[in-house]
Each structure stands twice: as structure tokens, then as C-alpha cells.
Length: 256
Image (cartoon, rainbow, N blue to C red; front, side):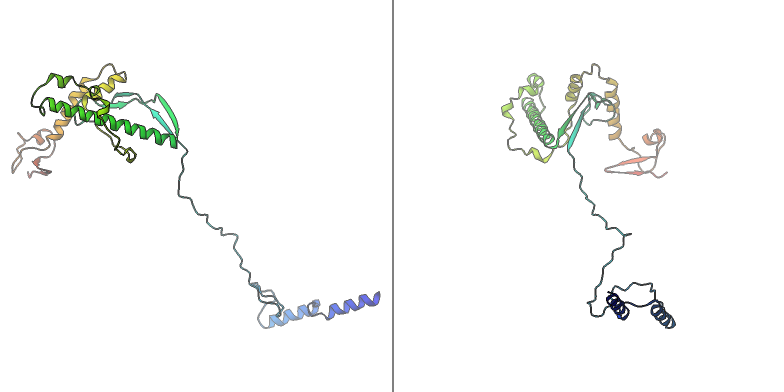
């Protein structure tokens, strides 16, 4: 048994893979004398055994994390619609005269739709608006026919309403209601009727007068000065602004 252990120890001493501390220190001193250290700052991934194939390891830094691609899309699952009561607006200048339309600051109801339900609801609303608009156009055409393009008065034409236009006379079967819609201005009578239907008991008449003056002031822009400004008669000077002469599609300041 002792002979076996002794033989094993001898084999270990003779094995080139094992070296004694003295041999290791001598090897290091030899390297140091050549200007190299036995502990290199760089790690060599090539095995020491020349018979084994060279193997290269790709190391990845733990400090640099791969950037995840950002998703640039946004998804929605529902639509909430708020309903506001109508009121007199006082915030716009209708081109056709009459009172303005507005809405109250606090909503009176709300409703939540899924995306599919909201798409169906919008399609029905666009279809209804298109039907009403075509019906109003037929009413105006009938009034012009009875009054001979507005040159003659006709009591029957004045009494006509949208309800006098049969629904079967309005055809929207060929219309494409999926392309969206655009705002249609309401005539003054229609706006007044909407306010009454919303419960507005008294419409401020002063707004109508102020809006009329605003429309006139926007149409009459500039003065009639020719060549030089006469402050005593210049409408711009009397209004406290610089003299601007009326020129079609352009306004120039007069020379003093």
C-alpha cells in the first residue's frame, strides 16, 4: 500500500502540469528579468495546451444593456362622449346674422362606447345630418321656385317648413357617409329654434345689434383718403389708428 502511494506521488512530481513553489517562483523571476510579469493585466483565452484547438470567448459587458425597441403605437379601448346643454354663445360672429350658439360649462350627461359602437353611432349621425341638409336644400329650392328666385313675395313660400318636404323625396342611398363630415352653418332661424328647444326662455336681443355692427366694421375697413391724409375727415384718424387707404385685397398706409 505504501509503495502504491509513493508511486503516485512520484508521478505527480514528474507530471509537467504540476510544478513546485520553487519552480514557479524561479519561472516568475525569469519573466520579471525579461520585463514581463507573471500576472498579466490582460487575460488570454487561448488554452495553455498547444494540442487543444484555440477557443475565443465573446464577452458582453454587463454595464451596457441592449435597448429595447419602442412601440410607437397607441391603442384605445373605449370612447366617452359628454353632452352639454345649449345656450346663447356670445363668443362668435355668425356671417348670416342672428344669435349665437354655445354650451353650458357643466355637462348634463355622458355615455361610454366601445370603438365599434362609436363607429356605428357616428355613421348614423352623419347619415342623419346629410338627410336633414338635403331636406333643407330642397326646401330652399322650393321657396325660390314659388317666389321666382326671390323676385316675388309668396305667402305659401313663407309658411313652408322642413316638415313639408316628404322624406321619400330625399335620396341618400348613393351618398358615402364613411368619408366623414364637415360643419354646416345654421341659418339664423334654425339657431333661434335650437335655443328655444334647449329651454332658453329669453334670447338677448342686444347681441344681435352688436354682431351687426361688428360685421359692418369688418366689411368697411380702410378710409377714402387719396394721396394724403386729411385727419379731419379720415375715418381711420378719427378712430385713433393710422391712415389706411382702401385698395382691393390690399391696404397701404398713407404718407403723412
